Length: 222
Image: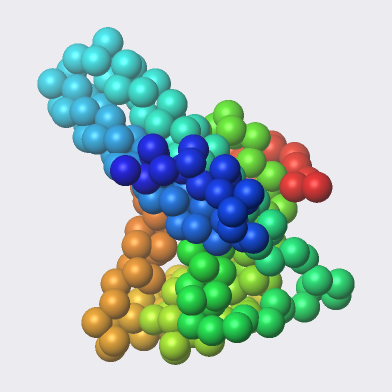
């Protein structure tokens, strides 16, 4: 459903002043579909390794990276739609949110940006997602009330620090921030911060993250 509607939404600009907010949601959902397929391929890879089937394992790993690439492309599009919906203000100022819905679109758009970066790194940079998006996402997360949004803003910022430790303040321990963010969500019965944490510290991403931190240049989104 999300994959099909993603192609339709931009055409609504002729009858709707701002289709970009809806596109943020649909791009996130279609990206999540690709992520799910990537995880299925990762499980196939693990089964093949256990069975000592080298050819199957290699094929599964290739397919996994293809789906991660697809997820990153879709999520990058979602983040770029967020920028169209909320043009960047001078001095990195936060946008003026009209209501709860506006804040929700903003939150999902930030998750688009975070996941685009992480999935691109996991696919060895094949989607060419600008890494400086992570810095913008971190700043954007501070525009939301952490307690109101189930600890997700802090989880997003902590996930960025985990992925790019050179950018974190010296006095901050990202994993502690991440744990506190998850507890904030659990106290409200929401586990979205756990999803952010799981994606940030997934063991399968470690090698790709280390390679990116050391070798990949920072690509500008502009």
